[in-house]
Amino acid sequence: MNRSLLRLELEQDRDIVAARQRARQVSALLGFDSQDQVRIATAVSELARNAMRHAGGGAIEFIVAQTPAHGPLQPGNTQLQIVISDHGPGIANLDDAIAESSTGEMKLGLVAARRLMDTFDVYSGKGRGTTITLGKFLPRRTESFTAARAAAIVAQLSADSTEDPTAEIQQQNRELLRSLEELRLRKEELARLNAELEDTNRGVMALYAELEERAAHLRLADETKTRFLSAASHEFRTPVNSVLALSKILLHRLDGDLTPEQEKQVTYIRQAAEQLSTMVDDLLDLRKVESGKLQIRVESFNVTDLFGALRGMFKPLSIKDTVSLSFEEIGALPELRTDQGKVSQILRNLISNALKFTEAGSVRVTARLAADTDMIVFSVADTGIGIAPENHRRVFDEFTQVENPLQKNVKGTGLGLPLSQRLAGLLGGSIDIASALGKGAVFSLAIPVRLTTSAPLGAPAAPETRHAQRVLIVDDSEIERYALRQFLPSSTFEVIEANGGYDGLRLARQSHPDLIFLDLAMPDVHGLEVLKMLKAIDETRNIPVILFTSQRPDDIGADRAAAASALLLKSEMSRESVAAVIRRVGEIHHASV
Image 1 (tube, helix red, strand yellow):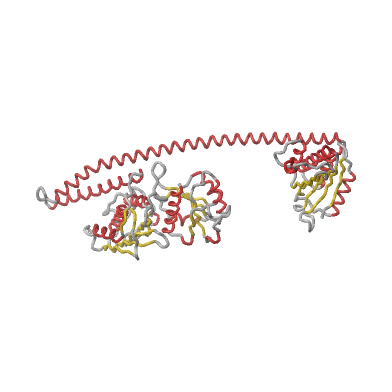
Image 2: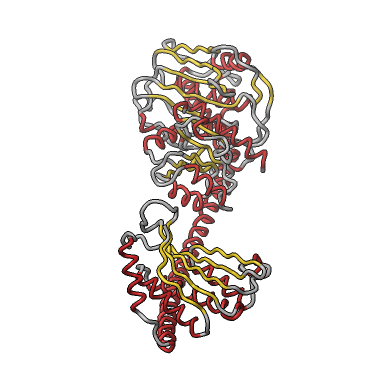
């Protein structure tokens, strides 16, 4: 239902001023604020001027219209419509006239009116005049527009005559001064904000400079440590080898017999030299891994041959009669294509540790294919003293040894497990531990059946960047973040956590992770929106994103998740599935670079 409030004829120039005054009166009676009143009055006066100058006159009608045209007139679906019509020659090239780039007095008036109002419609025909309909929605805070209210507004408009043109000019001047004052205040506020932003930028730049300086010092210290350990290890190797050679000569009695006490002493010397030699070799290998100089020699072999070599290697060693060592292949295993020497070195270290810390019982070495992945898992399970859960991560730190009852009798360097974890990372896999104090331990090595030539995600980074690859987990559930973190070896990955989508976006831009695990159902913003924003930002566009969710692929939609690199279901999360999806994403990422 439409209700006409006022009609005004445009016959002379003073009617332009009257149209502006009436527009302000009508908008004020309908509850528009002062700024909207100025916008409406300005739009009407501009189009009234066009009608007078280009058509010689016309008419203006103020109407309250409902959209859609049924039901009661309520704020929000009701608007003030102003119809300006004339009987002039019409507007040639109407589309050009209302375009934003239009020039000329009449065109500028049309563009200005279009910008100031909510709706704008124009009809113009050659020789049939022009009709322009402007619309402004009534404020929601106003009361419902009833017939009684419409009649009251009409009566008040009839009673109120238009003021003197001079008064309207004064009113315009007041509005202009008010606008200038608001602009001045906004300019001052903008200047203040700019000053604060500059101070903040200076602080950030200073922090960046400090961080860069500290990073340079850390790099220098790391390089110095590496050079020292490498040089020291090489220098140690010659005398250690000499001690081993001389002790071997003495024990073989090449220069005469030894008394039982002398043989005991030389044996102790040889054992100490062997331990030092092992530490030197481990140190050299660790530094080679960190510097990226350790070469991977990919070859084809099978598990049967690998286990046969290990069985023959450990058979002549002194093994307690109370500890049994067994090797077992579970199911049919494919041929492996990776670095056999590195795999053997890792397993030798794990088996040696298991034998050392098992006084009675068994050490069982198995190999199996991980379910639904192309990973093979080697497990070394013992019935030894076990490791407390709080020490599971510590055993992979360099030179770290966990206190245990056997420590007086069993010595170690604290380098074997850190080196093994680094070597596993180079092979595209990781080492995991499951153990409890007094209940034995199971160390599991998971590596791909076929090693790609390019280092996948999961391999340690060179020291000039960082030792572990950075992974960002974005999930509002602390339990889910913890569970996923447990499947990411601390020596291979540096884990950063965000408890929401916006926090994840901030950390992604600040820390530049190598990989992002992104949950979907989060309270602040949906994960797919976060994914869209990550791919829209230059700094984060190329970071691989794995959707980490409970939703099935059919529920997500292939088109919506197309920007993600992979999908990992929380219900199917395991050490093997996490390693497999990381390796798969790494291969895709390296192939696209």
